[in-house]
Image 1 (cartoon, rainbow, N blue to C red):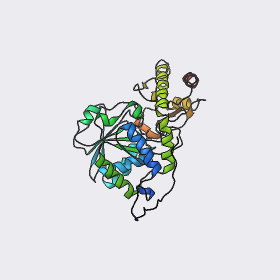
Image 2 (cartoon, rainbow, N blue to C red):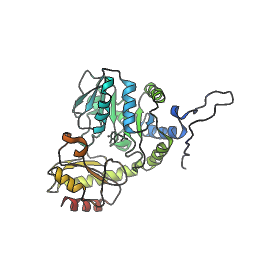
Image 3 (cartoon, rainbow, N blue to C red):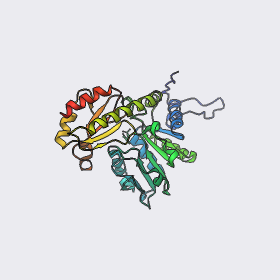
Image 4 (cartoon, helix red, strand yellow):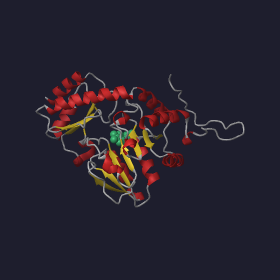
Length: 320
Ligand SMILES: *Cc1c(COP(=O)(O)O)cnc(C)c1O
């Protein structure tokens, strides 16, 4: 019923002294492999796990690109992805931001979009993206395979921060890349073993358990987010509400940074913390992380599994 959790770093060779499937944890381990198989099935490709979403991002671009190559990156997407790429700039990685609702710029070696983007909540134009000659990565952390299977829309790789919905309980840091092509997956697996950017068994086991309830969690979180988005749209203190109609994440603007700070520190049920995709509803002003990149009054909410009416009552009193 429950998969075993194997923390071994080593497994013996066979009777002839030859390698078995598993021999040293950096090159693969049974619990990680079981979690990869489960996620691969959900996304329709070959999954590989990494120590975090950012680790997965780093491993993927370092294995695919060369110094001087440029990534077309969706503007207004996850702030940390741009930070990771900036950290790799001394090694010759270049980035060109673009509006992902239209076609990516030509003359780039990799296209990176987000479905939907965090915190602007736009959906990428997957048709225009798939028509680009460069490999395409879709960060589908927020959509999850419940709402979107990017490999069926021409993507070459799906990236997940499994820390979010896939593990789903704010207790595991983990990342994943799901590959459409077997050869690409083998290349990335080899690179992962060589560089040591590999997931440990414990978070992989937590993701395996999280996946068992993924669909019911995400469907409920989507209903709650849609409900909150509707209520927020009708509230006089709220300016813009961003919600793409799928997933548990939404953002909205209040008048200014000071008001946003007051709202996020006045909730009683909703927790004032970063991250998303867990069972607890979270709110935070993104200004503290993203600076000028976002409106000063932008608040992001990740819907959890609490009673939606109780969440709205809480938000309403905080807005007041
Ligand atoms: C959190 C997040 C990441 C980074 O994942 P970590 O597990 O925190 O390293 C990447 N993309 C998106 C959309 C995220 O929300």
